[in-house]
Amino acid sequence: MALPSLEDMQVQHVAAQLNALHAELIDDDRLEEWPDLFEDKCRYSVISAENHNRSLNLAAVFCDSRGMLVDRVVSLRRANIFPAHAYRHILGPTRVVSSNEQIISAQTNYVVLMTRNDGQTSIYNSGKYIDEIDFSGDAPRFVSKTAIFDTHLIDTMMVRPI
Image (cartoon, rainbow, N blue to C red; front, side):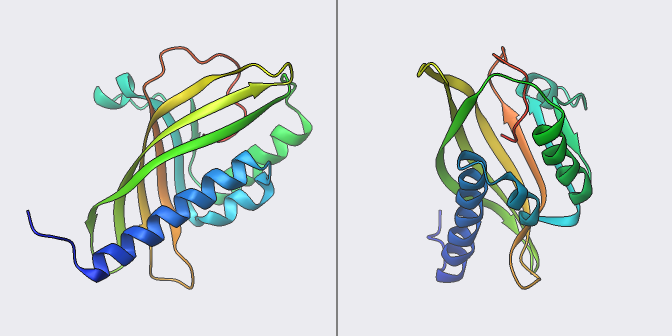
């Protein structure tokens, strides 16, 4: 196996930074900024590993545009009623799987911890992100972000992005 080039390492670093910002916006409850990480025409989904591995399209969350991501945040703020809790993401290293001149595909393992208002912390969700990131514009943005979760039981309504 050949060592990655400096250019490959720079692309990997930018992809990792985009994922870190994604997690930070969710964890810090800055959800109104979260859709800006995505292209206008994008796909965001949260799907079980079982469904993903069987090529079943049934996802716990599915959005196919930045507008739908904005609507999800507005709904979360105004319509949903859920127990108070906070998230904390722990991300593994981002690995660039493939790339061309504009789009890279990357994979990052994640664990999301959830702390309820009673102070109890538990693992809420774990799995891997599979991302397609567009590097052609002024800033890198997700073309697609798929959270494939290993967790078989979701403890509470999945209201925030993963």
